Image (cartoon, rainbow, N blue to C red; front, side):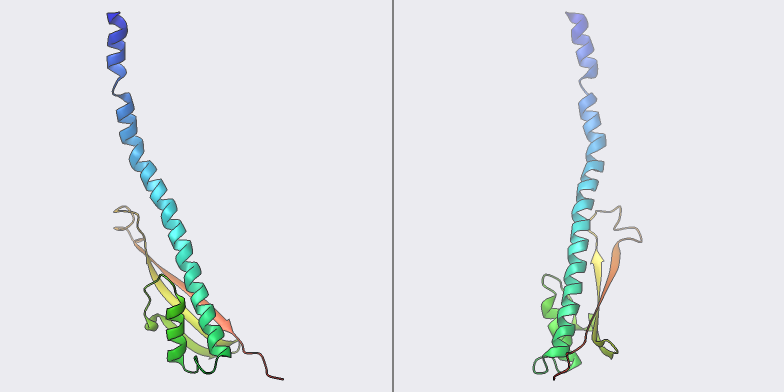
Length: 135
């Protein structure tokens, strides 16, 4: 019986060592998946905000008559993001009212990405909307 006990004692730390080696990689993978989801949500929110602001500028002459009002509308449409009005630009293009928005996305992945050049990612979205001609 002692022979089996010795064999058991020699292998008892293997699980702890494997767990210690695999856990950091697994956590980085899970946090990376969550971060990519945040990135997609942020870009979608920014794109929706510029589209809504461009539409407001093209259709609603009472609430979105000036560039400042359109920028304010874009900020209010960017739900969950902390964006300044200066991050949105408004111009009149051949397609109609064009609104462009930028946002610096900060990754949540710890030290590995934050200390590298990939610490922040500049997102940009463009929305253009032309008013319908009144018959």
